[in-house]
Image (cartoon, rainbow, N blue to C red; front, side):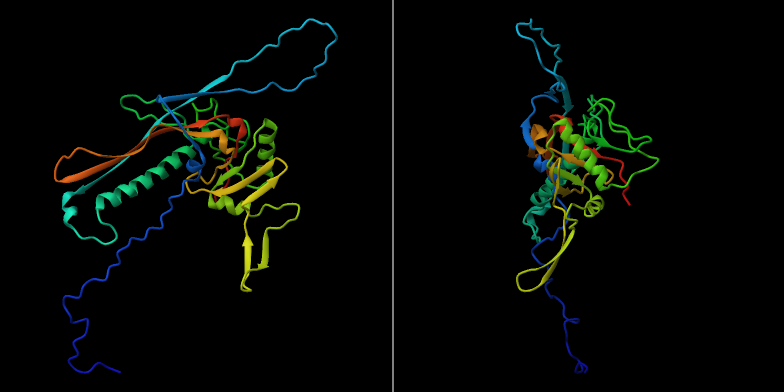
Length: 321
């Protein structure tokens, strides 16, 4: 078939209005599982401190009748601290925007401000997982918080060559293995879980990358069940391959894939042993006008609190491909 001669079709027409949907689709990930699970507390100084303590090891304890009592030597608490880090993002939009009719949003400044707030939360999540030592800062250097890897020393599994725990928790970062990375597996994971239990911890969440999550899917239990086929409503079969919860003699943990921690690091955490102390909670502020535009900034100042690192652990220096 062909068009009749001189057909005036849509390709010839001028003035057809555009067909642009009044919505914006954005699938970029915005989850921050560690930040979300951390309890929020108040910091009142740029150097936020806390104390840890521990019981002595058990010992034989038997005495004769009437003997004199001698006091035991006692140790002081350990005083720790972390610096608050300033997270800041801003957006500038010309005031011409006020007269424009746009699809998917009414005001560009509001839309862009919402975006930078979400992006800043991702920056915070990344900082909490970073292998970064705390930095005091000065008039020309930004303060930096020490991330989770810089706090973990008691229950860790890492490379046998250069790999090393922080020499001073908080003040130094972990030393990454560079010669030979090790595959993340069930034996290494169970070993750290046992170490945490022996130290008194009760871990409940494991943060790991998508690559390491696939390794965890290979973990087997006493029933050796990893994949299950079962009938669902409507007669459709479903294939299930999940390891949301892993039960061990040393505790039950939930595996939580994270996009912001390094793939080489697997964190085994006791949620209530971590806090985010906020000196300045996230705030949206309009900046002074400097011309024919509108500026807004999002600022947050906070730090990470490792209440007692011995309640947690990590499997480090894992292969990532």
